[in-house]
Length: 97
Image: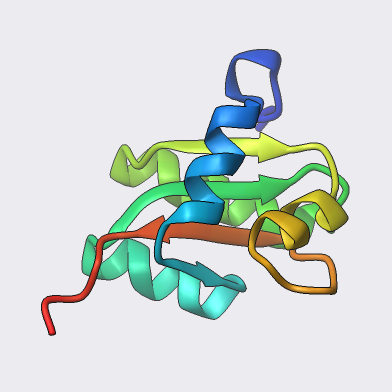
């Protein structure tokens, strides 16, 4: 499944949105947010292991969840405010409490 294409590339506005909102980082947290319906937009790193990102892209497609590709794990980590790279992250709805 070729899910990496130019129409799904994250823009600078997408990354700014991720920086400015509540987010989850990592595969487990991302899967939970998708399952719970709290993920607003999913971000996947193009240079991450496809064994991690491709199943997540498939889940997004199955659930009709918005997702985009970020060029590098380092760029995604920076957008998430962490000092290491990230393979996957999501902007999520604010908690009610």
